[in-house]
Length: 414
Image (cartoon, rainbow, N blue to C red; front, side, top):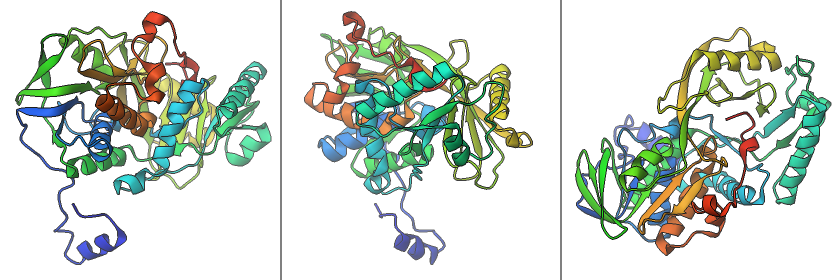
């Protein structure tokens, strides 16, 4: 595999860019692997990469029913942050944010990570008191967080309407948070995993599983039967369907979460803005598009599309805060399928089935967790013991009652 660099770009330009090597291989599935990972999104590919690069397990297959990165990894708003209230969540997402900060060098792929900050604003005095508590908790977790006044917010976002229907009283910002290119993250992990010997097999849907003595032995796919020593499910909203094939019931519900972008404009919004009260979050991509999200749809679904009512609500909320965008045209809209647990925190690690592992329940926070999710799940699979950062997020917490209720951490209702 050729290394990407300024020199290689110049050298290939001289030959019309006709001699670049393939980014990843297109192998024929083998009959047996050490590890089979179902789902070639960010979490599946990151797990495969960390298994091959740091855990020495290279006989790995990643199975994808569609195309690589075609699920939630390419259907999100690209935000990375670690400003969570509870210490368990803060520690995990801080590890992920630190990995994001060095990810471009790690995987030799420009993921366009821009640490422009994530600003959460308050629209009532009571909310301001809650946010002060939240910001203090974040600082106590050893993570950067700073309270901003109305004047500080106006200085950061000159075009904001502070005296909207629900006036802005202040907020807090994590300056190390930001956005990256979601496709680049997926492609970069895929490229490095493939170079390390991992087989990424697209158009390969899992349609059944065989089990024996509390172990999964084989998976039946549209490209044949594949056996493995260990299996991992990294399929977001469809985790409950795949787990059911192995006789495992998961506390997962799936809902669509919409996002949309406008036509591109010159750089005008230099941070990620979130309002839980007005119900919108917005940022500007490196291509100039205004990226908009809000609350999830109110119904369960596996559809990668949303409804007009939520789109209208998101537009109304955006224009309440930033009326300067009123003349922009909406270019496109999409939806991801969010896998929600009762406490809105993930389930990552071992299952009651001896050789089956899961990475699910990420809800609206799956993208920002990709590096840490892959790193810690790979460690767990090799050592057959939960990584320290994953111990609070095991499936048995729903029996013991040790829940981590991060429902408010989304910023808007989900």
